[in-house]
Amino acid sequence: MTRRSDGTRSTGSSGPVGSGGAPDGRGHLVAVVVPEPGDAVAVVERAVAGSEIAVVCLRAGGKDGRAALDRALAAAESRGCRAHGGPRVLGVDPADALPALREELRALDPERLHTLDPDPVHTGMDEASGVPSYGVPDAHTETAAVALAAARAHQTETGRPLYVDCLRAERGPGDTAAVRHPAPVNWLSAGFDGRLTAFWPTAAGVVRWYEELPGGRWRGPELLEGPGLLPGLLVVRDPHGLPHLLGLRRTARGDGGVDVEVVHTAQYRTGRPLAPWSTLGGPNAAAWRKGREVGFPAAAFDAAGDLWVFVRNFGHSVSHRRRSADGGWTPWQHLSGLRVADDLVAVTAEHGGVELFARARDTSAVLRWCQGPDGSWREDRSLPFAARPGSLAPAAEPGAVLFRDARTGRTCFWRPGAPGPYPLDDPESGSGAPSAARGVELAGWGYSVLVGRGTDGTCALGAHPAGRPDTGVWWQEAGAPSFGAPAAAVGRSGRLAVATRLPGGRLLVARRDESRDGLVLDGWRAVGG
Image: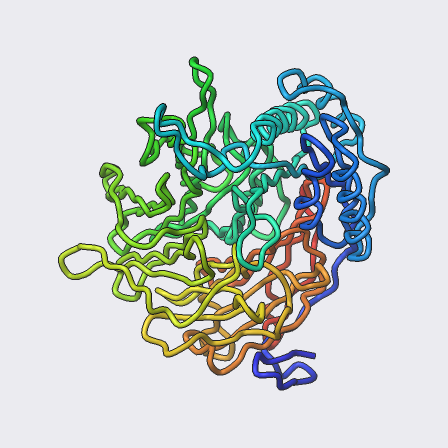
């Protein structure tokens, strides 16, 4: 059975979406590493159904904090989570915690690790020293730094991917705790020869899975070189379809500070080594305390092959750099406008240029920047929608975006010039932003495909005529569990592939069965791990 976004239903195989069977997934252990029990509350609130939560605290904390954590764990159990015993208290300060925390991770061997933000945004400035002040205790950042170090060491020791989320203490509109380093949306890519590649960030750097032959055996997960990478990733494709990777790298300074910089690489041949990571620095790199606050990058290619990279800077406005097709970079430049949150999405517009969307810092409103004929940037504050934090993503159509409505939670589509957004699914039908792919042909017509994670943790597949989301989207459960956001990719031949992640470094992968009518998958295969 399929469901259209306007609420009507269609039975049988007449709708454009179908699916095959899938092997079952299993629950996964999440280690929550915090200074004291009360600091774990906001982190536990984000736990999804199926998680087994092990809280690791450096110190015992007070009675109120322990009671608040007990309530948070009870609420998580009502959502389908399970507590892995009581909080583990190491009894150490952050400066001395690395050996004890490494030993605890050996004992737990978690699938995921959740901790706090190592580089929080400032809440003020000390006028005398010019040093930023923060709304969180130093123990938060110190614990996050040692948790990242322990997680990297554990993954290096075991050889198994350890997925990490760093969560901000401050909360956004309609959110519990914001993720500092977002996971990729479009993390599956198809090469020139039809072979698929999947990328994902981990504690020790980016890992990759790839096909040895189209539709054949997979290799991975293999750890790609990239010391100091933080646990987030952006994957964008250039005009030739080649995947480019961007992220943040954090390195210690000799004076006791840290440098956080934007980095970039690319894969030019499936299965071959990536190009060396190159640093773009940051818009506030001259002062490390300001530079460490740089937001996670957004990026897109224009029709000429230039790569545009955007970040939220220390002042909560936007800065950008551009790499021309011949490889030269411009300096960081500033875009004026309202202050923004970390939710930035860059898209390639129909006219071939690049446009930027960003959620406002203090509200759920969305802003847009576009270039005029003279190349100057202008800000548009009149967008007729508001988005939930962390839900903005590029649509399959040029210049358009996907997001979850701030009020209803519905996935919506909007493109410049439209009087309002088009809802694509039912209210509260899932979480996060869907991955979008275009170029799928059905019965001689072009379709755009959406793949997302439903409320029950399974992969959902949808389709609508290319450029016409207003006609409604056909949705159907794709029959596979998904730990995190699934992704879709379309090869040069037009064949669709869908992938989800399972615990243990494995993927589930399915391709469209082109011998059948509609958008039917040929059955899921577990690969890697």
